[in-house]
Length: 352
Image (cartoon, rainbow, N blue to C red):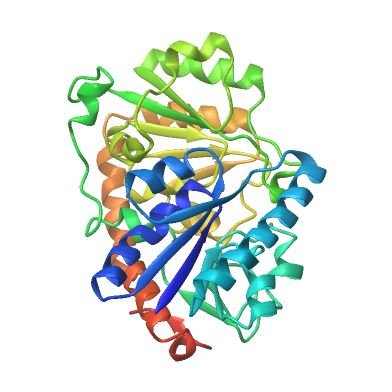
């Protein structure tokens, strides 16, 4: 097969990478179309994937509309040239319309319910829409629910082996406590009108967390000069190694909070979309792996409470292990889905 994978976020590269390597071993031809957002292109370069950059993330509504048109034109040209048998992506708002136009099947993965554009550009058009079983919307006969999360495709222990040398690269001693803090840019289409930590709240978080160890900031956008000494200076592909050894993760974005929990690292999140997604409800209420709050003060209070518990990391690893027992191999699910063109799995909940 020829498979085109559309990438809009760095986490999407990680989601597909293990499946891609296995698919290539089986003789399939895989190509990526990329959106220049955060460290997406750096990751594609690092993994030596074949790709074409079609757009840079737009700013504001007008900028996002312009990018959409630019990206649709670029995708049509690329798909006409590459002639894929399947096109896949996370979200799907870019690939579903062009796939429909050109008669090419589209397989979409999504775990984000509060994306208003999807009900117009993805759900009615995509051939198959895959969601975690905990997704809190019924998308009809095209929906396939599976027992897993996107992040399990690359952070499940069978695929991810942390590299301890990452600590020496940032000057952290073995068993030295540290916190990873993540700030997002709030530039995605579904981020319009949403918010996370304010500048004053960021200052408070850093000041208070310093009392419990080193603090490292990773941010989608430029950080103020006053935070520069906390900036994380690691290659993007090593962020998961670092989070594996962290005592705590706290941030206002979704992806890295989930990633931390899959690694067994205590995770706290605060944003105006705190519990608008089924995976965060499940990870908080069923597994107690991520604590997600609308109120930033509650989030900070919870984070400090975790840091003051000497056995919190061990407890999180036990909770993570209990969660893993109940979830499937998401990478194998993806591969089987592609090789069966999605037909075998329709109208089923995949639990094995």
